[in-house]
Length: 271
Image (tube, rainbow, N blue to C red; front, side, top):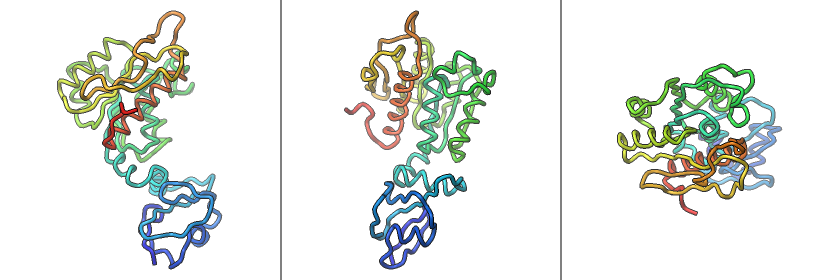
């Protein structure tokens, strides 16, 4: 009988079992069948080492089952590597809040979040907050949202203004640091301070994402050996050109994808 992983747990499937026959035996009525990271709509035989997860729509899974479902969607090997990682996010505005949500959905094991500010009405046009969170510290509001997204992610939140002195301590043990500030001087301070303290740790920064210009001009490039820069490098916020959810979101997800590629040993700047 083939030895498989069923919801990430070892399981001896009956000889000759198929994906659908196993579903009917262990979770009848499951709406989605995931085999080796892909949802299947046609039955297929199970082989030694296959990873299988069954999903019943509308059902709230236990934490361990949620972890298994995420692993199945991302493929178990990818999920294990992301689960073991720690990522820092400096600034929790339009970029940082969206990056953090994307990384939580990807199953990154630990996020170190830093921002001194509170949620304001002007933030709601592009940041991952809600009207009932107005006035809350961004660290508190975002952590509450991230726990709803993925309760398995460990969160370390720092409601402080980042300075040259405290940056190395706050982001001491991260595998990748995300720069997500608005102002150019803050961006430069963060990158310089962190690169001095940890010259080999990659930083994913952003510049040039304001307005509603073409999304295809936002790209990821290598700006230095361990510094990756997302954006078009030019479109700063100015009168008549504000910060808007679509283009900021494109840049944030470029940053999140760059982080994932770095954690998996790939070059984010490759075309």
